[in-house]
Image 1 (cartoon, rainbow, N blue to C red):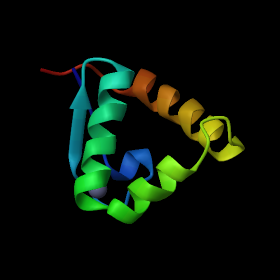
Image 2: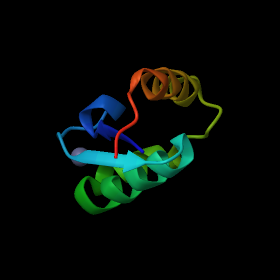
Image 3: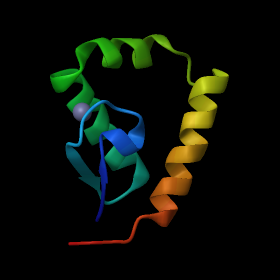
Image 4: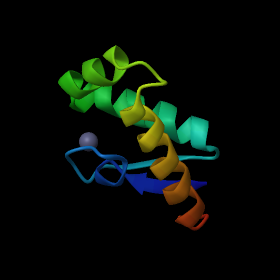
Length: 72
Ligand SMILES: [Zn+2]
């Protein structure tokens, strides 16, 4: 399992989020956004997945995922 903070994923707080796969972590991050930062969640959902901003975000996320060590 890997843990990243909300801020590492472009969010405004230091909440720790984790997942066993990038998809799982992304899903947990989305739940966190909906609960803690609903405006940001709405913005993300309104942005198409192939928008340059989202493509860049995904690239950075996958790099950060690769650089994050596994933990329990
Ligand atoms: Zn947050």
